[in-house]
Image (cartoon, rainbow, N blue to C red; front, side, top):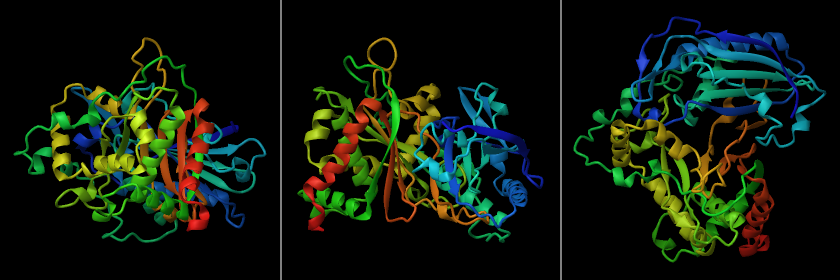
Length: 464
């Protein structure tokens, strides 16, 4: 772990008065109150004045908080372990830090979200009352080489990935002194857009039995030692993604009658297959499922505005399968399960899900059933996780986060601390994909080998 010295910590308030209102969203009730860690890396630009640049960052952040004023607010508990967002302008946190050692950006390698880079992300204290926890925290860390990183922590309960990207890009545009386009850059904060009572779904019957995403996930069966999660990075070129699509289509007899598989469907399904093989130890009947999140902005009629600034990420899960089926059935079988989970999230599903959340009395269990592995069926600590949670950060517009020192040379999650969770991202040149995945350390080597060998075994490079 690198040594980071925090030099200062400031509370950044909106530069102008903002609405003092309270926002409530059913969708946001099932999110965790923890923060999503984003890491942006910028190469050295020695011709710039660092002190002037830092002040520009602070001033522009203060301006951005006028537009995105909910991020300057705080959560507060209400009845039933739910929360509402109080837009009280208490501000965001801004930390200035430096790397104490003679460490350059090159020494951080591929910036994998491990303990090596986690100190570059703001450390949030969750032991204080929820009303004191900032919803946005930023850490600027300077390196001896002249480069720097921006570690950003967004509260998951109030904002999702697309909205976070829009905020960062708006902040960067303000830092560069650019004017904002009212038709493009202005966010929508109306949480009523996702109110089940206002989506004309009053005629829908309860779909409680269909919402398996809120049910307890499969637990690890049998004696398995406690896990020690480590992070692995694997990369796919554009050609390798094409290979996977060809492999999935070739194993599906009905492929000529359906739309082509998406990159996410195929890569997520392939990951599930490789992870299950790596975890397999003769336990073919072990149940497993894959979970993911779906941006529902364009799945409603009428669709939500692109600038909707809350959290619209609805959870969805595949049917539960066995290790035996995931391992031995064709890739198309696994990919079809992923597709089923994604296509389930339509307008009716969203309305039904919101109704389900509105009626749920144990909201805390709903949050943890989806986001965390199930406890072991045996007494004692968790014995392992048979499931996979895949999050797509593909096609995020991170290159627009140019604060005046050029585009970031890297963007990705700041750390991964949940075994069985994976992120899919575009590489810096958008010529392929990067997968960051957290697995038990005893499974990582097998996973890497299975991941790469599985592509080359079926479609060697010479066939492309």
